[in-house]
Image (cartoon, rainbow, N blue to C red; front, side, top):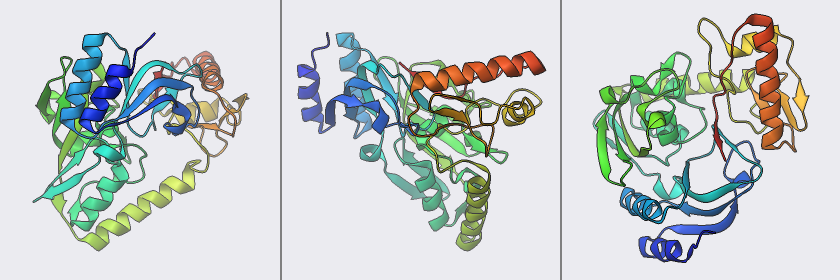
Amino acid sequence: MIDLTRLKELCDKLGCRMITECPLSEYITFKFGGPCRALVSVNAAKSASELVKFLRSEGIRFGILGRGSNVLAADEGFDGVILLFGSDHAGISVEGNRITCKSGALLASACVHAQQSGLTGMERLFGIPGTVGGALYMNAGAYLSEMKDIVVSAEYIDEQGNICTMNAEDMKLSYRHSIFAEKDYIITAVTMELQSGDPEKIKAAMSEYMHKRSDKQPLDFPSAGSTFKRPENGYASALIDQCGLKGMSVGGAQVSEKHAGFVINTGAATCNDVIQLCDKVKAVVKEKTGITLELEPVVLK
């Protein structure tokens, strides 16, 4: 049994909001998930550092959430503490051609901020759900553009709770992967370098990519975005479609009829529904094509 009394005292000292028995369904884009023992909204890197040191010293299990756009939260919940990097840690600043975002800033907000500052290089990322920290964690990308193309450095918390800085060349950025996904590092801020451009042209390009996204993707249903990583020499959505799996469902989870690469929540899906459906899709695709699909979202349990 976790005693949250001292954690609450620390949160009060740091000015961080804490909610006990908090339903994770309210914090992930798939809209399901049981409660965590406590959710703490981080407000600064220094606060994150102190929280991590405390939780580790007390042996309290903890997890990290941003917007929850690439996460499956277990139906039974999370028996530990969730550190939320959201609106309380979402500042954005611009200096020259560089834009620095706290990790809880929405990627879409960063794109708009860059556009208004006359900085080009983020247009293709506009519309990707999630935070800047989450985007770097998984090296998010779209339309042949990825975070690795623009990231310069990041501030992060290491395993011991120390605040550190890392340059992009040390981040092991590759397709949907970074060093942050390998180690227990927590991203607290990201600096990106862009190029000067015309704000109106940048805005037009952002609108064009957003239109493409809304035209092809089932954005009117809760989901975690693309459900499977792109296999070598192919696309997961094409393989799933080829296998005739559009519309396949388990409970409230369904392979989108609009875009086969998305598993959606039609209204009452559970985490178990989604995992069972994904397992079925993987099995059929493997049987018919010989290709093994890999789940893209992180499972928080």
